[in-house]
Length: 218
Image (cartoon, rainbow, N blue to C red):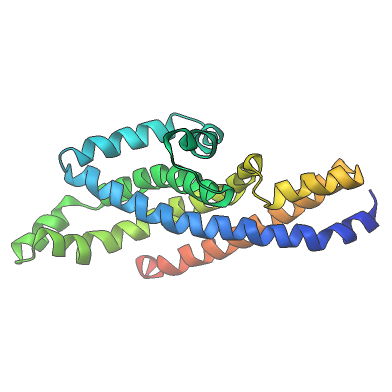
């Protein structure tokens, strides 16, 4: 393993890592909105929209993320919708993560004792007030472990958008390998960067989870 190649490649790999973080953060924010909205739609069973939400979740969970990326980037232009690689990648990652987060939100909301909703309504709260003040705060705490895991998976899934030429960490690694002909060295370096990122976020999210559940232990 040539250390010189690693040192020379690090600036480019770290720059690509910023793109990986950008894709992860933007996608997870959009996915949270999609997932939460879809979960509420399914819980409230809003007509028509409920069916659309159910089909969306079924299709996304039933097909590979790589296929979804190809459909968005290569397929949508055939119906007049053209997106650049980064927008396509964000859209695919957000829709994919949103479907899984929807099930997480839905399960966590339903995990809260129904008696609390009944008690809140008996005290004069509307359904919306009870959801906002009583149910949702508790459900979000329940969902934190799953949400954290989904973000970690999303960070790793960003590597798949390299197939549509988004210059994130894996794509940059391939470009460097084309010049250096050192696949083992470069891929191991990229793997180390992914590992450091995942370890950092896992530690951070674990601390957040413990802090948010402190009052429960007390």
